[in-house]
Length: 422
Image (tube, rainbow, N blue to C red; front, side, top):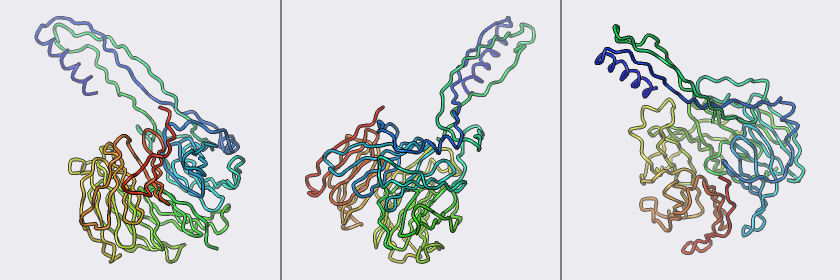
């Protein structure tokens, strides 16, 4: 629009100078996306095991037993058999439109389907069964340009369209101004863009399972579902947290919740009733968090996304904050480490793995939080999230899913890779 306005101003200026009549044609190309809908009944009936699909735009990572579950953003869930980490097998795909987050308890998978939550029996990954739909439990998606989807159907895809407008206008010699004034608004994308056996979620997760409860975070709320009967989740509590909530991480009887303006700590000593304990505030950033018994590790990534804190962009930095949580009611900053564009992170013993985007995968000795020692940088990938356990680091990156053997921390080895189709 700025270029367009400038173009008109130049035409008017020329008219004043030359006092002659000018005819011209302005051509503007618009790109926009239109939703493709299916009925809710059709979509729910299609939630079943399907042949494996090539990974394309991956999101959240979840490990359970020998399986890796990886979210295909807004499309569904890939199931990868990782019995042999040297040769993982992409075995199945579950189509779940609007899916962004997943969690697993025993043989039950929980996933969001836009504002609904689906519960799926995955005892046999080759023959999964939809067990329950909890409707309207998550916030509505927010789209550009005020687009409001049809709430009676699900969006299963977006189709790109382009169109070109040509407008002829004339500048009058005597008046020195356009005879036909017009305006146009550039159209942009409407996208979003007993003791339970539970899995492990990454630090970017919005779902987590702790014993007999599933906890989820939306933009503003923390929700607790009773899953003592895993295939019949019952929503028991919704607690307001503030705004721009992003991630959730469990540690024993506590939840560490990351937002764009800080970290919140909640007690789940009473599982159905999470209660606030303490918080650590920071400037407006993207904010995954993990924790151990003494410290919380918070990666802060600068963003230019439009949000309620967009005005703070100029002051943002890319950094790792280490926070002392010995006094859980009053967490305190210990030290800040500069990063490139940090996102997910994971910790195993004294070893801290940080996905630093264009800065690569960074591995630190974190025995002394006042003096982290950088052990290795894997710079040929652009990592997003990582889970470390049993000497294997599973990394989601723009180039694929990578597995590294770090049993010898001084000789970390790439052992397998599943590529992403670009």
